[in-house]
Image (cartoon, rainbow, N blue to C red; front, side):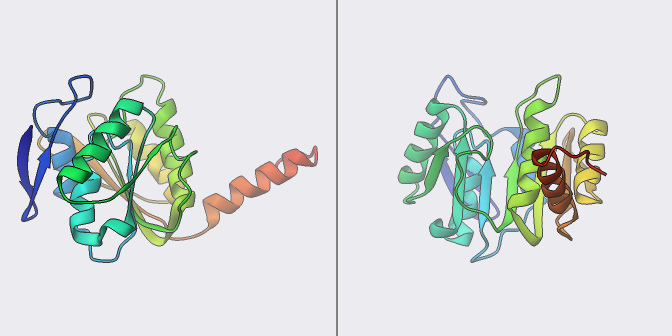
Length: 199
């Protein structure tokens, strides 16, 4: 177990040895949180939650009914639920491949420290599907060790991105400003279902 103070809130984490960063808070996650200012009442998704640190911190500010967590790893889901309980919170934690099993939408914030994969498949789905789950004005934050691919992908989906370099990590902030990307994807699927080429 370890405890950490983030934004004036103290979070206790009971980790599982099989999960990422089992004995201390990940520096990348802390770098991302240094640029995020959750507000009471905001709807938040901790995407790829691991032990649940990000979602638990957000719930302490936004309210437990407004914060949702998900991870594809059953052990991570179990650990996140336990950590939420240990911090006096009753949080919804989904076992989900990306956002597939998450029922909610209209998020103000989606926060993610995505798993590293050389082909970026997971990060691609997080970004594309995450865009459609944000409300207008909602923001996605991601933290990685790499810059170019993430900056380009977020810019292509959201139309713009801010990049911060903190403690050796790149933190990306992208805001949903229109329905453009979601509508383009819908038109493509609609045309494909009719056997037409996408214009």
